[in-house]
Length: 123
Image (cartoon, rainbow, N blue to C red; front, side, top):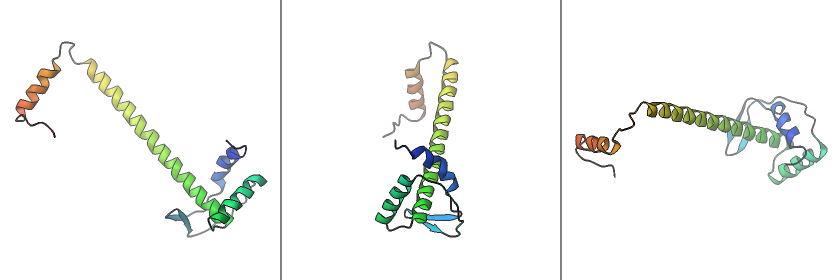
């Protein structure tokens, strides 16, 4: 981890250019708002170097980086929600499992289901 990364993640929230669209990894500014952000000189130098390599202005690079950061955060939130839903479902199944009698014959139940369904097995 670089020394300035924490500052970047804290500053990202102030770097937003709203509204913007993202097309093939590039931010297409539809309306731009000017913001003032203080960044360490080493970070600005690295931003400028990478922006130049990609043919972007500093502002364009920061806008694109912000868009990617926000998309990553949304994806992370969605993943956390999915994991929460899975954990909840698993807990529910454990509770349901506690209600099944200890001597329940699972194999016989499966055979009954297959016979009822005409013996078809999924391929």
